[in-house]
Image 1 (cartoon, rainbow, N blue to C red):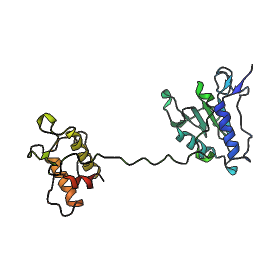
Image 2: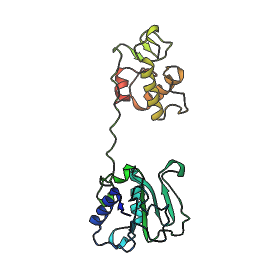
Image 3: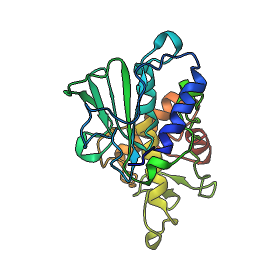
Image 4: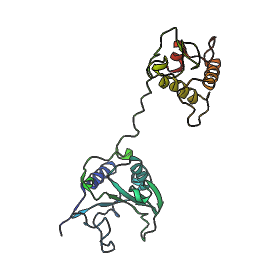
Length: 246
C-alpha cells in the first residue's frame, strides 16, 4: 500500500532539523512498526496518510522535548490532535479535556521521544511553518493596543452626576427624559473606571449605567485621591473626564 507523511509534519520536521542540525535522531519515526495497531496514527489510515511523527529527546543538542511540547501546546495550532511525552498526553479535541496535560497510561511512556499527532482532516496537509519560539517562531504575541475612550460628550457647562440632579447633571436618563444619546453608556464607563481603580464594588450589576449615590461616593473618593484642588466632589466634568480616561 502506498503511503506518505502528512505535509504539516514534514514541515515541522524540517524546521526541527534546521534548528538543531546535530540532534540525535535515534527515536525519530513516522510509519509504525509491528507494535502499532491499525488504530495508531503511525499507520496510513487516513487516505494513505501517516498523521504522526516522533522526534528524539536530545537536550544536549537543543531538542528538549519538555520545552518543545510546552511551546507547541502554547501555540494552540489547530493542526494539533494530541501530543505524548514523558508519560503525559495533551489532546486538543473537546471530548478529551482539551489542551490539558493528563497522565498517559499507554505501554510506551514516550520518554525518549515526543509523539505529535495531527488532525485526520485537510489540516494535516497544511504546510505552513509552525510558530514555535525554539524553532525560530515568534517569541511572544504583539502587545495589546491600549483601549480608546470617547471624548467628553457634554457641553462644558454640563457634567455627569446624580440622575436626580438639575438639568446640567446627566446620570443615565434616556433621550425622552432629557438625556443625551447613549447617556447610560457613558455613565457605565465612569462606573467601570471606578471599579478598575478600586473605588467601587466589583460585584456583577454594580456598573448599571445609572448615576446615583454609590457612584457619587465612588467618584468623590477618586477625586480626593487623584484630583487635587477640585471642589466638585462626586461630579465628572470635562476636566475630570480627561484625567479619568487619559
